[in-house]
Length: 277
Image (cartoon, rainbow, N blue to C red):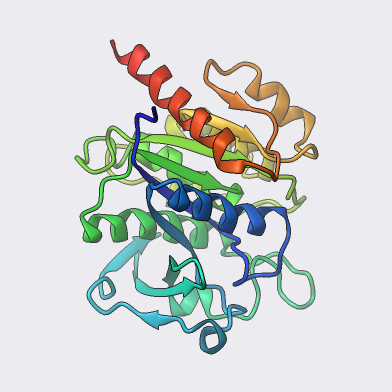
C-alpha cells in the first residue's frame, strides 16, 4: 500500500500547452495517472508567452496573485493563472510575470539566442511555485520536478524552505531529460539565487560553472531521488549520479507509468524514513 497521498508536479513543459515531446508528454501523463490512482495532485508550469491563453482557457486566480517576489534585489509581481485539461479535469497552475514570461518563446528567441535572464526566470518560477502552494495551504509529500528549469526546487526545499511546515518533510524527485544546451547561464546566477538561510557553498556547483550539466548536478545533489528520464543524459551527469547515495530510476516505460512511479515514490518515502531513524 502506498505511504503517500499528495504529489506536487513541477515541469517547464506540459502538453497540450506546449508541443508534444517526451518531457511534455510526461509533464501531462504522469500527474494525470497519479490523479487516476486516487492521489491528490497539484501541477505547475511557466506561463510562457507562446501558450495560447484563449485556446486553452487560462484565467487569472486573483486570490493567489498579487504578491511580489524579489529576484536580484528587484520586486517582480507574481501572477497565477489556471486551466483544466479536458476530459481529465486535471488543473494546471501557471506561474506568470510580464517581464519574464510575456515573450513568445521559451528559452531561445526567434534568432536562437539564449535568453540572458533564463537564470532569473528559473529563480522566479521555482520560488513562485513554493509561494503559491503556501497560499493554497497545501502540504505535498512528494515534489516531482521535471527538467533543468526546475532544478532549484530541490535546493530551495532543503535550504530556504527547510523549516517551513508545508515543505520541510517533503521528498523531492528530480527528473533529468536529454535537453542539454551549450550556453552558460548568467555568472551571477548563484548570487541571485541565495536567500535567507542559504550560503555560497549551497550553490557552489553553479558558482563554479553555471552550465546545464552543473545545474542538473545541483538538482540531483539536493533531491531525495533522481530519474534519468532519457538515454541522452550526458556521461558527466551519469557519473555524478553514481556517486550519490539515493534512489535512482533509470527507465520510464510509457506503458503503466504510474505503476512504476507509485512503487518508486513509495521507495523514496521508505528510504528517507529509514534514514531519519
